[in-house]
Image 1 (cartoon, helix red, strand yellow):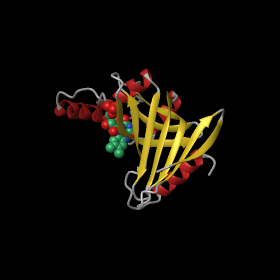
Image 2: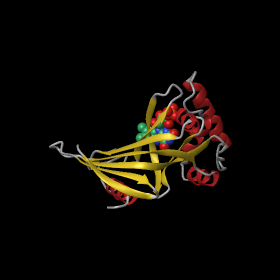
Image 3: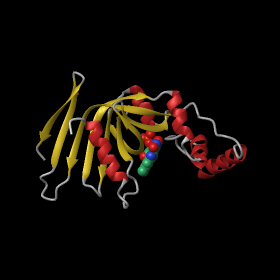
Image 4: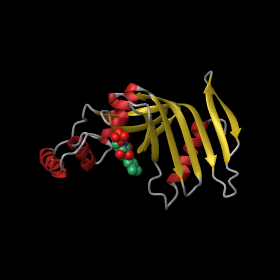
Length: 192
Ligand SMILES: Cc1cc2nc3c(=O)[nH]c(=O)nc-3n(C[C@H](O)[C@H](O)[C@H](O)COP(=O)(O)O)c2cc1C
């Protein structure tokens, strides 16, 4: 395939079709922290298009703060059942508030309440404080929609390079590196 976005979509589709793959949309997002260390964690990939790879999160979380300070980002996916690895390098931008609202409304009521009750990545002095807050919010929003919090949204990873690896038991993995230059993708094969 000449277009790596189409290739990603095809692999993601195959992953979704795997009956034994529970987290087919989990991707590792690596940011650069305040000390310059890489910092990786899994998130749920929401959408993929020519614009890039979208995920949602608390904007005030560590990753949110990292990306607001430095948009350089890496995204890594591994689908064990298929033997497929994808590595994306790119720059992140925040999604619009309209898109954030759309994703917010696709979340379950419980997930919305948990998001509202927590300040992701901040120290937690007691679990019971959080569960009490959840009870209060649950009563408050029993029969009404939970509003989109100002500090919840998402990011799009605009890819500069995308590498696809097909795992081979012989270790002669197939590695295809796509690089985005002058508005076009070029493809290079890499030694395993
Ligand atoms: C399978 C999986 C999916 C996850 N999806 C998300 C997600 O979509 N958004 C998110 O903010 N955190 C998600 N998390 C939690 C993150 O891995 C992480 O713990 C959290 O976002 C805080 O990261 P930070 O402190 O580096 O910002 C997920 C964790 C796992 C294991």
